[in-house]
Image 1: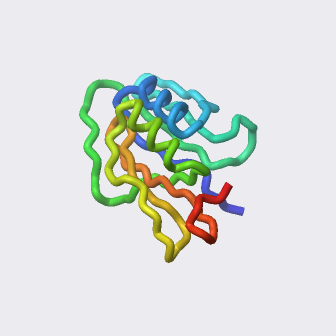
Image 2: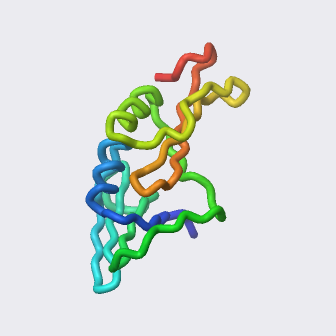
Image 3: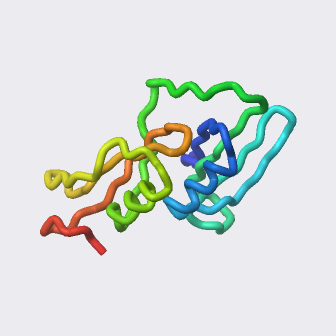
Length: 135
């Protein structure tokens, strides 16, 4: 059976990007691959082996600038505490694109931040029936 496995994004500094995804989102490096023309580090929320969605940070050789296109949307993450995640992202100097706001009609709070290279991240927290975050 076919399943979703990974998404790759190009970054300018692997160490800086790994630190961001570890500290802000709690991801852990599970894979490292290197060859002459590129280096990749795979991140997951669990270090267990086996199939699981993986975010692969890819750094091509050289110093070519990263050009973000408009043919795709933000990477989506779900968190149990959107306020704490935004506070940490802000503390680490991340650009806050849009503060979290409640969308009662669909039962979520949604906000947007950028990673160190400007990749947009959509952060979602499920809301309880009263509008309070679910625990």
